[in-house]
Length: 144
Ligand code: AMP
Image (cartoon, rainbow, N blue to C red; front, side, top):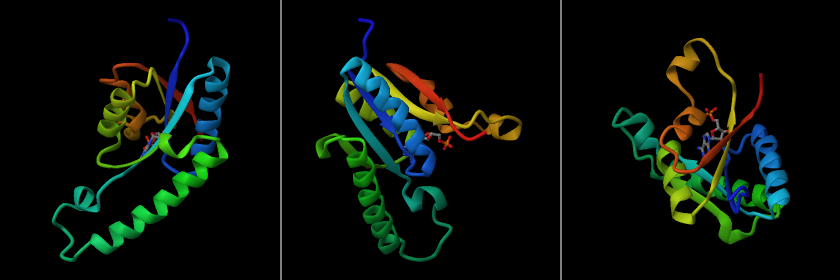
């Protein structure tokens, strides 16, 4: 105990994700921990329900292809091997929890915007991940 052995960094594939994952990798080096990274694609049908009367599957496939490439580029720049990259469909909070348990991660690293006002009331991914996580969660402050 006292050390982290397997760190899971959840990335939204924005520029900010670079800052979050650099922090995660620095921790990983300090503990000689295994690093894994993940990105969750929210299915368009989940986001928009049945509101859009068209077939979304082609757009969804394109989103998946782009995300896959971006995640791979991202992971390679951090020296995270292919087998530790995870691209998953679903809701970010739920999938981050599920994967952390599945791979036996003992630390989840996410970004946090330190929101206030209405945005705070509505909650954030970092909040969602913190609640119900079965391991430690590090929220790396990003933006303002
Ligand atoms: P948000 O609260 O949505 O601004 O996101 C804050 C943090 O949650 C991001 O920096 C990521 O660490 C994580 N996150 C948000 N969306 C995703 C996603 N689709 N896949 C993986 N991680 C995510």
